[in-house]
Amino acid sequence: MITVKDLTKKYARTTAVDHISFSVDKGQIVGFLGPNGAGKTTTMRMLTCFFPPSAGTATVAGFDVFEQPLEVRRRIGYLPEAPPLYLEMETVEYLRFVGRLKGLSGAELEKRVDYVADRCAVADVKKKLMGKLSKGYRQRVGLAQAIIHNPDVLILDEPTAGLDPKQINETRDLISSLAGDHTIILSTHILPEVEQTCQQVIIINKGRLVATDSVANLQARARGAESMLLEVAARNGELPAALVQERLTAINGVSKVVVKEEFGRGAVLEVEASKGQLVRGDLARAVVEAGWDLNELRPSAMSLEEIFLQLTGSDAAAAAAEPVPSSGEPPSPPTDMAAPEANA
Amino acid sequence: MRSAWIICRRELNSYFSSPIAWLLLTMYSLIFGFFFWNYLANFIVEGLQMQMMGQMQPMNVNEQIIRPLLANTSFLSLFFIPMITMRLFAEEKRSGTIELLATSPIRDIEIIIGKWLAATILYCWLLIFAGINFAFVFRYGHPDWKPMLVGYLGLLLQGAALLAVGTFISTLTKNQIIAAVGTFGACLMLWVFSWVSSYDSSSWAQVLSYMSVITHFESFGRGVLELKDAIYYLSVIFLGLFFTARSMESLRWRS
Image 1 (cartoon, each protein chain N blue to C red):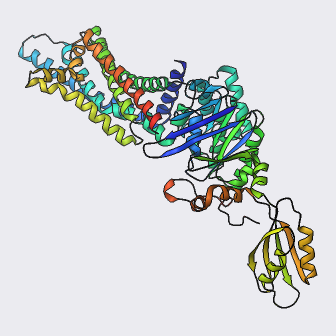
Image 2 (image 1 turned 180 degrees about the horizontal axis):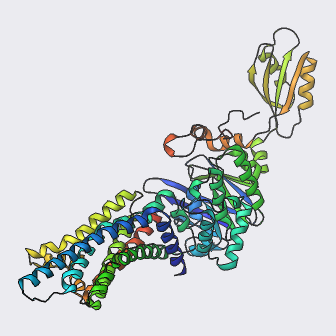
Image 3 (image 1 turned 120 degrees about the horizontal axis):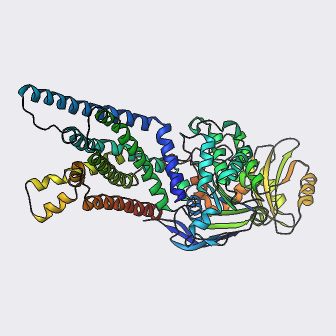
């Protein structure tokens, strides 16, 4: 449905998007992931023919964004980062206006307006001026205008930014329910969103493509070897972590043991097994045989957050962790990838 | 052109659903009414004086009321045109709605013509409201309506030309105030260019004077429809909209 090849966008001094290539199949939801300023919006704007690429090609539903922009735009519904609402208009007036712009008219237009208003749960504010709507409603009106002409492709730029947790969930559900009819690309810097709604992830950083794969594959790929988290403690008295570490390292198949936390009576350790080795049983036995307590033993599956940090490098992680005040972006909600409990 | 009409209708809706259009109409009608009242009073006083002195010089409603009124109206428009055009693109750029228009399946030129047309239609309403005053002249006198109509056509053409200039300037900025000040400056310059012809007759002065909107309004004001003047206004409209299209294109490449 969407094919992007060596897409590049250069500004006067900087290269915002640098030779990105990927493709998206029909009916998929694809998460477009990257820290702020990675080039997500720029890529989306090229796909929606807001501006042409500096180099490379992109086709949407078989039409080239540079050669046939009008055909592409007919097949795309686009929700920019800030919903493009005319605040002095009523919701229903606005939806009619956008519908007409996209080529609808007459009875069909009215039918689609009613349909998208129901679908996006904005039917109860149809007669309200949009300037009086709450942020959540505005976002949903923005989504309603994007799907009004039943486009093949939906491009959503940070559709959940600035919403409260309840609204985020509602918006996510809405987006998930739209899949199937539409091919969806949604950009975000909120990782759980991708894990929950998307089948495929495209990670970009500093304008470059870092990874593109299915969510499951990415997790598997980044995990590589099995890694376990253990909490070991002594019945009585002190237990130096180094002692435990030594004991565990000696087990056949264990490649690395890292002390995560030390608390006198015991320690939390991360054990990495060599690829293909199952060492859980051995670990448990070794601990018990030494006369210690095994308080916890669980696989430390890598969340997308860790994969993301691993792939985009630590400096990107640091940049993403601090909302940059000058960027004008809303401060990150608590579900952001900056959340420190990556292992929780 | 269906899309241009869609844009135009939304634009008009937004003028008339906010206080902008109503305020402009009120102010324009008030000021024009004041002009009208003054010329009418002068006309009446002059007529009375002549009767008392026993002279019977011909009095002409067209020459003494309508013509100077039209000239004043053309000047009045200078102040109102920036207020009509300043929001056209600047507002869309500031609120981000330009992204909706620019990613809809319509051509840039349709957006531009739609917006300019809406501005011109609002300007027509200003002229129509002002024109209500002339109903009194027709009720109590017998002016010649043809030169008046030509004069009105001149006002419309001059307005449409300056509105095209304003539309262009509105694409250059996100800030409505800057757009308004820029447009006002441009309109005023196009107005006063004609001054140079009063002291200088070299060729550059002639060119400068020819570029002035007021030079070309003169014949319309007299009730004479001159082709070259009509073509001047049409070419300013074309040029203004052409530059707007180029500006929008550069917006796409730069932004």
